[in-house]
Image 1 (cartoon, rainbow, N blue to C red):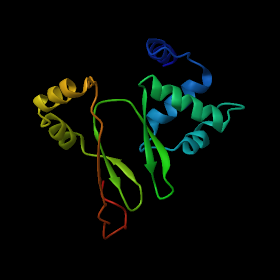
Image 2: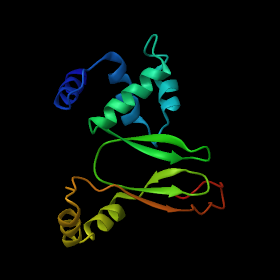
Image 3: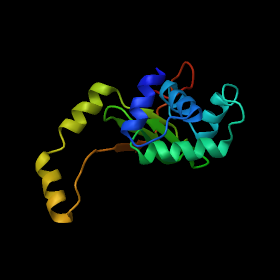
Length: 153
C-alpha cells in the first residue's frame, strides 16, 4: 500500500509523508464525509505528534492536488467536511441538519448522464471555462425513518 500511495502522491505532485499517508487512508476508509477534527481523532493515536493543523494543511494539499474534495458549510455549525476523490457522484445535503450523504451510485450516474453535453459545450464556449468535472449537490431534507429516527440515505 505504501508504494501505491507513494506513486499516487508523486503523480499529483505531493510528497508522501507518514502524516499524509495516515490522513489519506483515514479519509478513504471513512464511511461518510468526515471533518478535519474527525480525521484528526482517527489518526492521532497512530501518528505520534501529529497536530490538527497538520490535518488541515494535508487536507488542503489533497484538495489542491485533486485527491479530495471540500464540502463547505455542512452541519448545523457550518463545518467543512471532506470526501476522497473517486468516481463522479452526487451528494445529498440536508438543509436542516447539514448531513451529507452520497446518492445511490446508479441514480447519481443516471442524473449525471442526462446533463446534455450541448449545454456543457455552450457553457464552455460562452464563458471560456473548461469543465473537467461535475460536482452536484442536491439540497433538501431527509425524511426520518419511523423505526430508528435516522435519515434515509
